[in-house]
Length: 341
Ligand SMILES: [Zn+2]
Image (cartoon, rainbow, N blue to C red; front, side, top):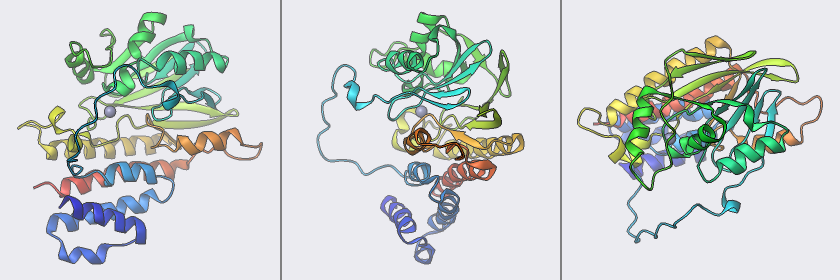
């Protein structure tokens, strides 16, 4: 079945159809394919990367028979991850690596960081990146960690220790970090600090962010609404805090008798639909992600650098674009649910 689904997705991508093939498939595959097609349609070209990361990963990858490569010790080489920082909006800055994003929201009374990338990169990207862009890292007051995975939480302890920044996670994801504290191979965990609750507002100076608990990618993933300005014009950015269906490829950390795959897909769908409605009602017209692939950062930052006076900011994708992004992840999760026994 795995290969069938992969093939269907690939065919759908290649020829823009594939539904004729469905008659021969089982009930689950047929239902899944309807959702995959809905996701593909919503993705268009704008959200293709997030479509591929979700709809194309609904079943476990084939097991490699090759012996596993030895894990390299120590942090990866800088040139394998370093990315230049960039100002994206009047009050929003990209401080991430080539694959993982960290964002700085500047306010009248200090700076809020959203996601802290890894321990090995946080100083080079976040601290030095801010200095490069004329920001003072000593002004970091809060660090919102969208969820307790090392690629987003690993640098939080450094920011907590160095600048006294308050670190915010959901209760569930503080618990998740606690499980990693005694693991010498895990990213360092920040000391337990502030707990985000659903709908909680974080006000710093003239700026208020709103956090929502959107379980799915983890039990306590935080998704956030962030007011931004582009050359003085008001916009609203939505950050969907966790995207991939990690329980498919890495079931050991997710699947229990009480929480089978169905639970995770169901939970994800509920959250995706809810946050889509919240973002829509609030008028969000920008998506930012914590992986540079998902929100198009890899193409948007170069486009932004070449932007001329009259061109619009490439991150502003409109309310419909935000809806479509959330529809992609929702429909791909529904396809995953349809494939469950
Ligand atoms: Zn994650």
